Image (tube, rainbow, N blue to C red; front, side, top):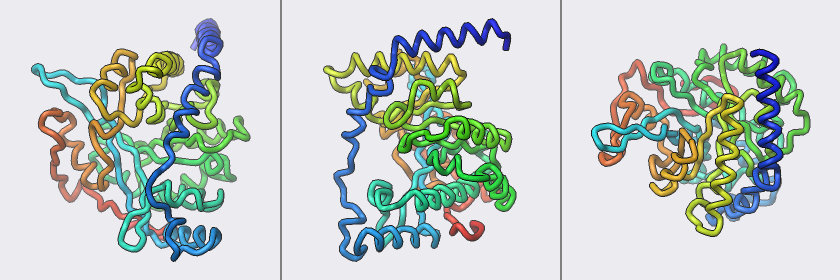
Length: 343
């Protein structure tokens, strides 16, 4: 890119940052984000888990034993119109974690609070191993869909992360070209230069990156300028605000700013937590191209989710249809223990 073009983009970015600074972008949803606390039962409510250290140890044992039940939630492209009917097209997935314990699945809000940083890094690698196994499904590459995997910033900047990832790809004979690492907003970026360098090294392996829950945690407007990301994912709290008249205007302004900002950097924008056609209509007008939420699909077993891809486009009126994958295309959605390969 010519120096003049780069200068114009930087000036435009600075104009956006001044217009939609932290007060109206990064801080936009932090109040809403606090509303997302789970009302359900927690692993800590089970008397069999013992004290805090015992809870953490038992959770780690579940992770190490391969007790992860992987589920995928599809993302959809907005909007395809055909013969007067509204269609959606699956554009990718997010890999979500459930831990199987005593006959039920534990959700992240039930076990993550009990894990220290080292435990979260172990979980990150267990999920990466699961994603590498799923990446072997031929239908992913043939349709261009990617699987997003959550990753803590501290895991990304840990020593030799890219080399360990390379080794995992080789060990499992996975396909890195269908993986997208979604950087979580749960931690402060303590070393931005190191983080950016690690991302570029991983991109060289074939994976790409997304900023997850953008604006909801420790993200900054500069993240899109500093980090080589392909996607920005906005938290469910923004979608929720679109349903409340008192907050709708502020939410729309924030989304418009982020879409403009992301577009300048060549990144797409996805909004999570879409539950109504009204939210969808607003997002379309604001230039959002991709959405994720219960309006389209709930999280589902990995094989069932992958089986949707051959249809590519799904008419909403027909509901969720399932297309069988051939044995050559399908892989069992089973998570391997961190010490071994998935079957």
